[in-house]
Length: 531
Image (cartoon, rainbow, N blue to C red; front, side):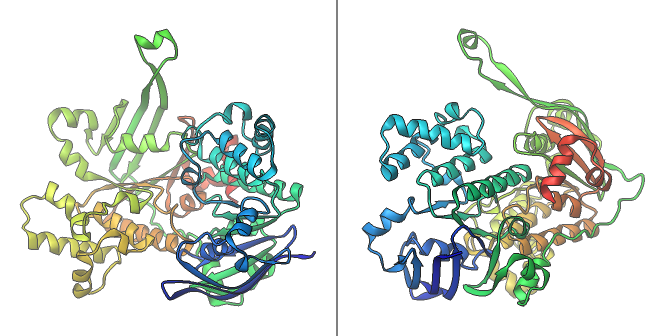
C-alpha cells in the first residue's frame, strides 16, 4: 500500500505550553489506524491539529497528505480539503449538528458545496447516503431535526455527512463513546463496511481498547503528549512493550464483591411497577384529551442489603424511568417500597424527607451534575444542611473532610482544607465522580442509584471508580441500583441483573446465569455485542 498521510515531528503548543511532543506516525491508503490513550493524552489535539481546527494553537512539524504538507497550507487551501478529501466524525453528534436545520439540509449543504450538486440532486443523494448508513425510513429522517433522532441515528447522520464528499481520509473522534453496546457494534460494523466500499483510510481516536481490537489494523498509543508505542494490533495487544500500554490493557473492570447473606432485609422492592407519560394526540381529538405512553410495564424486583441489581438495556428501554421511579421522582402505579415505607404513602404521611435520605443518586456526567457556582465544601455538604440542620459550620466541615477521605480524594487534613474551596472545573473526570459519590454518601444512605457512573470515564479511571464502589459496599453495607449499558460493568459489580427492552422486563436473575446462559434473544444480542 502507498502512504496517504505521513506525520513527522508533530508538536502542538498552547500559550507556550507544549502538549504534543514531536510525534511521528503514518497511515496507508485504505488502512485503519487507532490513536489510543486516556483523556489528556493528546490524541484528539494531534488529530485536529492536522486540519488546524484548534484555536490559539501553535503547530509545527510536517503532515504530508497526497504530497501536500497540511501544516504549511494557507487557510483557503485547507478549506478545500476539510470536509472534502479529509472528513471528521465528532464525538458528540448532538453538539456537532446544527439544531436549527434538519439533518437532510445539513448533509445536502455538503453535497452542494463540495460536489456542486443542484438542490434536487443533493436531496436525492442525501436520502441515498442516509440509507447506506442503515437509518430506517431515510426519506422521513432526512426531514428530522437532530433532537428528534436517537443517539445512534444522529451518529449515522454524522457519518453520512462525512461520507458525502467521498473522502480519502476519515477522522473518527470517539464515534461510539456515548452509544449503547448494540448500537456501538452497529456503528463499528457500519464504519467497517463503508471503509471497504469506499477504500478510504480511517484514523480512529478512542480510549476503548476492545473497539480497537475489533476495528483497527494498527494502533498508536499516546501518553501525556508522547507517542509511546505503535504497531499492528495483534502483536501490541499480545506483548505490549511499554509500561503504559500494559497498564491500559490491564485496566479491565474486575469483580471484587461479597455475596449478600441469605435473608438480608430488603432495601428496595417493586411489585407491578408501571410508569406512563402523557403524550399529545394528533388531530382534533388532541384538543380534548391526551394519550399515554407506557414507559415501564409491570416490573418486579427486590434489592436486599449489600446487593447490587444491574439494570441493562438500550436507550429507550426504560432504565432511566425505573431509576427515577426508585428515587421517588416519578408518579407510578404498583407498589414501590423503600425498607418498610412506600413512596406514595411517605408523601402523604410527611415522611418523604426521611425516605429521600435513604436513597441517593450518582449521575452519569459529574461535570453537569455538580454546580459550577458551588465549592467542594458546599457541594458535598449540601445534604447535611437539609437532613442534619443542627450541625454547626465546624461540624459540617469535619464531615465533608471525612467524606472526601472516604472516597479516596484526600489523605491528609491539610490537603482537604486546600480542596474545600475549589470548584468542579478544577478537577479531572474521575475526581469529579468521586466528589459526586462523596456528596451522595455524606447523608449515610442505604441505597445508591448509580446512573451510568463510569460511561464518561477512561478505562483506568473507570476501574478505580468501580473498585471504590465495591469497597464502599463491603465497608458500609450499601446496596446499589446500577443503571448501565456496559455488560463488563454489570459482570464486575452486579449480583443480579434485570434486562429491559421497550419498557418490558425480558430477563431477570443471577448475573452469572443471565449473562453466561441468556435465554432471551435480545439478551443474547447484548452479550454478543459486548464480547
